[in-house]
Amino acid sequence: MRAIRGLWRWRHNPLRRTTDLVEAWLALGALLLILVAAPLVGCLVGGLAEDVLQQSVREQREQRHPVVAVVDREADRTPLDPDPETASGRDSHSRVFAHWTAPDGAARHGTAMADLKAPQRGDRFTVWTDEQGRIVGRPLDTATAATHAVLAGFGTGAACVGLVEGTRRLLVWRMVRRRYERWDQAWSQAGPDWGRTGTGS
Image (cartoon, rainbow, N blue to C red; front, side, top):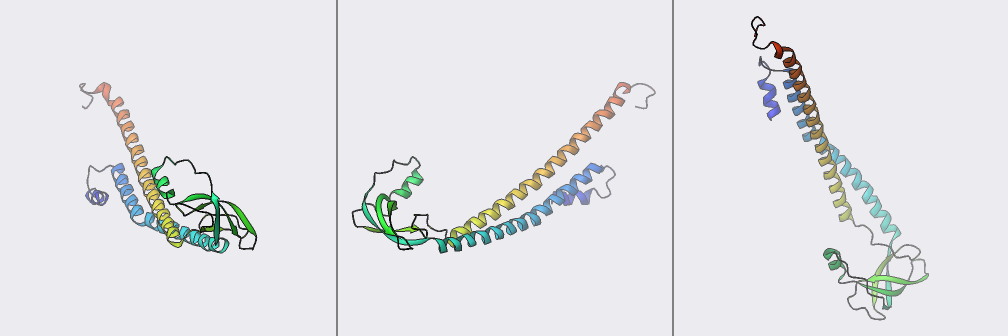
């Protein structure tokens, strides 16, 4: 708004400098880019991220399978995690030795994290495996993918705003520097004769 008022005020102002008008146009252009281009770029990036992540969701659902594992015995307890947020997420999980049947029918066994507070031999729990029965992480769900896409869009939009505003400030800074340099040159030429009779001052 200040840029628009500046353009209107300086249209016929006799004291208007060229740099004043350029600075006002820069501010107006930056405002339009921030209001129009940044949201548009953010939406495009968010949409592309959504497509990629949802494709990943579909692929993971096809490649990862939930199978039932049976506890053989409890494994050594893992060291306490110093991060309270991570530690709180592991309170209800135990590390156990277990066996399970892979989707291809092969028998598998190994260490797994069971969602059991006090696992006993023979307890059952669910693990996610690939086609060969190797334990993998839980597949990405649709809601999480959408959240990541939204965050990517917002982040890109914010980065565009920062880039536009940073560029505007840099250009204005360079114009101000050049203005001061011209003032210094003019003063160095007029300074020695300032106040002398017959110099026109």
